[in-house]
Length: 251
Image (cartoon, rainbow, N blue to C red):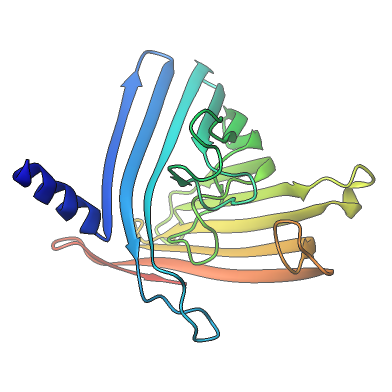
């Protein structure tokens, strides 16, 4: 029994261990995706903003995602995805074993994606709840775990000149919280983005503008007031060398 005891103690002392299994099953029109992750967390000597310490803690945490897409025909696609996690924690799908739902309770699940997507010639777009549709290189502006809900439209113009090979315009209206009154009273954001490719795709530029309406100063229902604000983002990708492949990304 001593070897088993030592193995158990070793596992419990690992501060952050992650196990992940990602797989997909493809048919002619229907595609399934799934992901499961589990980790052991040990947290000690962590300071708060006021320089006091949190209590030491050990946690067993996991998350599950499962999704499906159906390609109805060449211009229509349906998709959905569910995940674990509390509704008020939009960027955190992790659950802690024994955290609130108890032995015989239910595990919180929710839809993170539910959409209809279409494409016709130069035009494409989707309606519903889906991944962030604007081009970005990292999570500096938008977290990959936050899925906007609204309408998105994209127009793609091809060009054969080296100076401008391709031009795409992305735009959308996304509702954070419906007021039940006029659309202008909703909490929403709108975005417009231009994506251009130059010099055999060695240079990509994507200036973007986003407007946010009636955003709470504190998210998740504890706001004291609302405010409007705008963001301008300029991103670019420059391919410096093909062999070896070297590129620079600038935001």
